[in-house]
Amino acid sequence: MNDDRPDDEPGAWRQQVSQASLPEIHRSIAVPGKAPFWRKMAAFAGPGFLVAVGYMDPGNWATDLEGGSRFGYILLSVVLLANLMAMLLQHLCVKLGIVTGRDLAQACHDHYPRPVVWGQWVLCELAIAACDLAEVVGSAIGLQLLFGIPLVWGCIITCIDVLVVLWLQNRGFRLVEAIVVVLIATIGLCFTAELFLLRPDMGEVALGFVPNPEILRSKSMLFVAIGILGATVMPHNLYLHSSIVQTRNYERTPEGKREAVRFATIDSSFALVFAFFVNAAILILAATAFHKTGQQNVTEIQDAYKLLSPTLGAGLASTLFAIALLASGQNSTITGTLAGQIVMEGFLNLRLSPWLRRLVTRAIAIVPAVCIIGFFGEDKTTELLVFSQVVLSMQLGFAVWPLMRFTGEKKKMGEFTNKLWMKICGWSVTFVIIALNITLLILEFAGNK
Image (cartoon, rainbow, N blue to C red; front, side, top):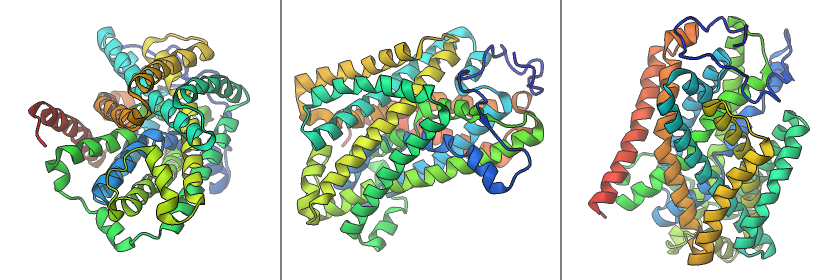
């Protein structure tokens, strides 16, 4: 137990955390004491963008592309709702990590009995495997579109990123953050150019952000909507964010923690606004270029790539699309590595060599991807991506529930306990997530169209 946690009162936790989360980079980034706002903001900036990566990974591409091409702008309201939910949940992760010195996985380990902890760990590993599957397939598609590499070989090539991520982490956490920001900027610039070429009707786009009850009545639309939710609010991001905010060496006093929560929340909220732009841009791109032109069956990423240039009349459109996709897949690899390490160490207090942990995680994703692509063919990749996002959504409730419980308990959070309005908003989000998943299961078993 660390001796700088005055908030660890007797009875606050069933167990006490034995080691810091990500010990190799814990408190490795200095925060200036008395300094102007912009200098402190610069010190805290970074973790939010690592979290935002999970909100614009290849899984998002698949669900947003399908949603836009099949249903037009109507699911933009789901993208907006999911992003607002994400901002709230990531703020709570910031509070948990900074105030208690625990990431969400460690908090679960220190609170719940062992059988529950093992069950949570298995579910979380399944979610990370689903996320990693999306990264593998997305990167492989990007390599195929740009260089003509077959998808099976592209999936295998992604093993190389194990070495890349390890090298980056050994060079310092600031370098990891810098690489992520550069890749995010690449994605943003590509889609800004795409929208400039596309010139969508902004009035129709604005109407798409108004919630439509038709989403709940249509099984196919609801399935894609839950996929968007699962692709946007990523369960592994909740574990990741509560850990990496502890890389900042802020003052462990109530005032220091309060300041850290404020700056870290600004960081994540700003980054998530950028992620919202990317997700909305993908859906708008698909709705304008395909749905409005009668090409409503364009749900495959490869088909979108082939049709973008002819539809928009610009040869650069498809290339920008592929570059952004590859950047998205590689970016997600970095955060997936960190999340896998955090989950295993936090839930099980088991520490493997980073290269072994990453290799195991990547193998779990590569083997099914190669088998499915090899057996069913390359035309099943987008279905695989969408399914992976639904799996993520199904696991989300099991991560959000303990997050809300821990941040709402006085013994655990002290003066930082969630206010009443925060509890109402947070639990509402939790029950909405659970209700949507139950609704989807009922529709699936009932066989309604």
